[in-house]
Every structure is written in C-alpha cells, then in structure tokens.
Image (tube, rainbow, N blue to C red; front, side, top):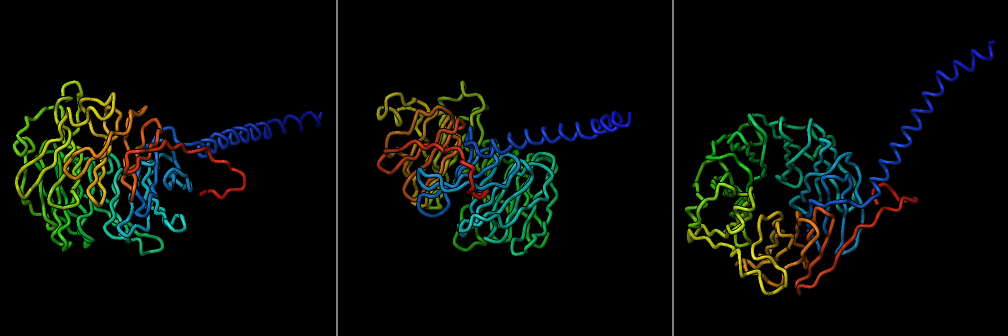
Amino acid sequence: RNYKIILALGSCFCLPFFSFHKSLSTMSQSHFAQLNAPPQSVQLAVWLGTGNKYALASYYHTAIFIMNEAQLERRLFGHSEGIVVLKLDKAGKRLSSASKDGTVRIWDLETFYCMHTLSSHTQAVNHVSWLSPTVLASAGHLGERLVIRWDLTQPDPIPTLHQGHTDKVCALEALTEDVVVSGSSDGQLVFWRGDGTHVAQKHRRGLKCFGVLPNGDEGTNVLLCGGSHYIGIFNAAGEALHSISVESYTGIHRNPAWDIKALVPTYTQQQVIVALEAFACDTTEQDPMLLLMDFDSASAQLLPPTATFSGTNTGTPDVIGTIYGLDQSATGTIVLGCEKKYGFTLDHELRPTFAPAGPFSGYPLAVATLESATVFATDTAEIYLQYPNGQGTDISIPPRSVGNLPLNA
C-alpha cells in the first residue's frame, strides 16, 4: 500500500517536471533553429565605412549579418526580436541596432563585441541617431511619445528622457553634437538640447522624414523636414527659415495619393533628393517619384518616369513606381530600389549609369552604396551585389553550422 502511495506522489511531481522539460527543450530547439537559419527577408542594409563591408538585418530575424562583398563574415546575436534600425556612428567604429524587443545595442566593429545594451524603452525602438561617436538618441514606437538621449562614455549609460510629444515620433535626426530633433504625427518639430531645454515648432503637416545640410560650421547646419507635400527648413536654433511646397517648386500638380518619403542631401550640399511615396499606385504611376531640388537656383529636376530607363534592358518598366530604398555615396552616386522590383544606379544629375539590376523576386527595400559596389536586398531575401561596370553577383546567406562556433560567429 505504501508502495502505491509513493508511486502516486511520484507521478504528481515528476510527470509535470518531465512535461515542462520536454516543452522547454522543444522551444529551445525551435529558437536555435531560427537563430541558425538565414533570413527569409531583408529590410536593412548599411555600409560599414570601409571597403565593401556592410551589414544586413531583417524585421523578422534576430541576427545581424556582417558581409564583405559576397562573403558572410559574421553573425551578431543578442536581440530577442526582429531588428528595425541599423545606424553607423560618425566615426565608423560602432554600429547601433534597434529592435522590436525594446532595446538598442551598440556593437564595436573591431571586436564585434556588444558594448552596451540600452533598455529604457517599453516598446519597439523605431528610430536611432548618432549625435557624436559617444552620444546616441533613440525613439520608440506608437504610445511612447518620447526621445531618449544616451551618454555612451559611461560604463552603464544613464538615459536622459525628452518628453513633450502628444503623438508618435515619426522621425529623429541629430542636427549638431548637442541638438537632436524629433518630428511627430502631432505636427510638432522639437529641438532637444543636451541641457534639457528645447524649442518646439508647429509644422504645416505631420512630419515623416528629415535631412541635414551640413554647412562646415556645425552650428549652422540646416534641417530639412518633410511632411505631406511640404518641406520645412530650420536652423540649429529651431528657427524657421523657409517653407517650400513641392508642387509650386517643381511645377507638378499635387496628387493626393503621394507624400514625401525621404530627403537626401546631395554630395554638393546645395541640392536635395526628394523621394515621393505613392499610396495608390494605380493613380500615381505616371507621377515623377524622384525630384532633384536646387535651393540656390530655385529649380527642380524631375526624374523622368518613362524613356530614361527603357531600352537598355529588355523588360525594364516604363515607370519606376514607389521608391523603397534610397542611398547616396560620397561621390554622388545615387542608388534606389523601386516598386517595379528593379534597382537603379544614377549619377548626381539623376542619369542612369548602366542597365538596372533586376527584376528581383521581391521588392528591393534595402540599398547601400559601398566603396566600389552597390548592394540591393529584397523582402524575399534576394541579395544582389552590383559593381561599377554594371556586372553583379547574387549572394546567399548560408545557414549557421553550430558545432563549436562562438555565439557571435
């Protein structure tokens, strides 16, 4: 009888333990399988500042992939959810990654060691900007409505909170080493200073993107902010200098289905590339999706939506549609990925330099100009490296062979 009681008690305590252990083992196997697998889509690409080295990441994968041309050099692990932002610091020595897990990680690009894990956000981190090699600002998702400044000279960085927005933060940009600017759906443009003071400006429309025109002396940097079809121009003190309607500046008619998506100052710093975002492609395909605006001459050049891209490659679309990825090199080369699943390389006057890359199997959401190549990456994880002669190669990220490799390998 005592024997039966002991068996019954053993069943009560041991079976749940073995069941839990089995569940944990299954979960661990699934987790590590996902870590070791290549990404199924790529949304982020950033040049690492030297040679043809670059980093790739996905909204749906927790690893960062360090590439050297077509070769995978290393995987960086640490985040527990997908990665939303990759930003190289101004000295080219540290890489910041922001994730849906609510953290920002700072990686040393010599050792690939994670120097800091910044974890004061309560939601996904959508924006990161470097004020200097040792000061970083970040902003969260939706309900947070705040900007956090981090002093990375401290072993355990203490966050400084900037609060004041009444809606989500849509854009974040460092204007000087002391001033970081945030734009929100509430229409507020706020210049946050290191001493805790700030200047707020009401913009004509909700703000979506920023661009910075450096003027040599950092204190005279000019901020460009885009919202709806307007561009606002402000100095580092937060004073409004000018407001431009894209339709009046270019002579094109405003289509209610498009908006300003990106502002990229050119290498001459006297012009800005304006990328337009289409909300209803069937009504905007014939609209120019890229403008080159010259502030000195008060003129703008439209990216021709038709013949410019035809004839050099059979099957090239007559229109490029919405621009997904946009980047520019230090020498003025412009690369973009478009809705029609092609990648284009343009000179500083928006003229195609050679036949476009593609068509891809997915949308080229991530583009990056390297020292002597361009990389395009798609939402189907298709990765293509194109060289200055127009030739290119397809790249695949292999699954990780676990063996005795260190975690970040």
